[in-house]
Length: 538
Image 1 (cartoon, rainbow, N blue to C red):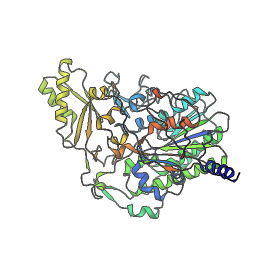
Image 2: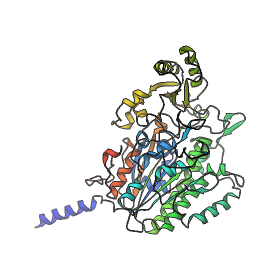
Image 3: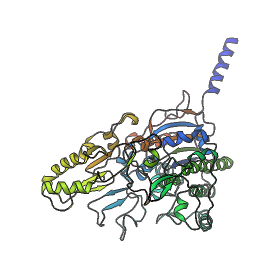
């Protein structure tokens, strides 16, 4: 009898110690922190005390991957809530070249409908037309029409790619105000007072933000030429300066205020169906582009965002809603070479005239006796001009590969037809070859005939004095690696350092709400978030 009692007690203790399956959440909160690389997460993790700190106590995948080569905002956001890599989402870049397009520049923006009269790649009508797959919110709504889907961001492409084609409320900052797409449901009552409050805030100047003690060592000027420097910005702005607003902690705070206003007004998570809100926080990206990710500006930005996220989670706690959070990023980023070279990266450099696609095309044209343009470049993608005779195209491609590889700034040049013929990679993303990385975001017809792979730490911004000082979009891990964090009340936290992919987020969240997703329709896999014998993936 005593032994039996002891055994039962032992089983009871084991059952109590085992992590429980998370209760089916009533609200899914998905956060994308634009340009929040795994490197930034690791660098600042010990200093977080708010929202990032809370999420760090959940399930942490510090080496998540935007595994594809096209590490830009639109492709990255297209993976987060579709479970699909860019070759399947159709979003292969922020912009791609379509030689059959009616417009003069032939450039198509990822979140536009170019068929509308008067539309151009810079003056476009926002649309989800080019997103070829459904989002998690769309799948949830198809399974239960009572589901509410909300998406807000300071970038249109982030809001569209995470929200999808059927959204109850879709809002983004257009540079002057928060707007939505034509044909969307009427604005929730929370939107009008928010917009009025934001307009009043923008109409006033903003004083410089204080520099936290841990940021002070980063507060030093880095000359970038032309008498200009970065590294001492504290986010002061004049009244009405929307550009400085966008590249500051103010923008993220405003976006979270709108997100909370919609959660509260729509009573998300309080009905029978599970709701979902996607929140795209873009200020980190604009700060990175404008000042670089290793300066005092980024330090102030991330600590401020940490506080704002903590405040949002506190409000959700007080609401009593049962919610789960997933946080990741659309891509990482590269610091400006002027700072990198004085911080132990002497090979950091800017792209220069030694890599000139137009000049290479002109040389090939003379060799093969073809008049007019021969090669067209759009980012890393190179296209053979469609007027080049078919019988000469193979020669043009062969010579282009040979000539482009001669540049000391080029690691390799990949042939599009070879990439398209490859199967999708199945190995862990951290060991993918360059060709495998390209395959994950290669779609014939939208991707180039050739793909240029520049060497590591070659910065595509040629002149930092005329706008952005740095950018992203490379094949390399400083752009591919992003954190992936999951949290819910009562989670038993753990950390898994092996590489996972952002396409794993959709099937993982779907498992928590019992939503079946056919494996053949996505590229991701369910991640087991339970630190015990039980699994949410069964």
